[in-house]
Image (cartoon, rainbow, N blue to C red; front, top):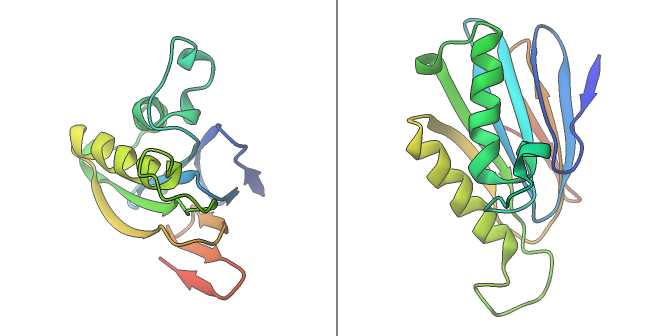
Length: 154
């Protein structure tokens, strides 16, 4: 079964599913407990939440990490066994302003939030100028990334 992670959403599951999402400047935070085969993916659109974040915690880096961890531990994952992979954060628009580079801001915010909760980033495929489609296999933790030029495995 394929779970489609919507823009600004997140999914957590245990088992044999594959999660999939399409990214541009957004970042996929992928968390995985290999021993329990429990994983989650958030499609982060923005670095910081607002007062409405409770409606859409996957949308923001500062709420997505906590939402993923809480739901994964409810399914039986152990926080000390969870590792992260980050994908996305492309510079999709031609802008010279650092403040306008939402992809870079999303990447930095996701890394900061993971560091705050003590989750190690195991691998990443971030930045660049191309969008990506991400496939996360919960059976083995493999992350496959397809862009217009190639396919990579994390």
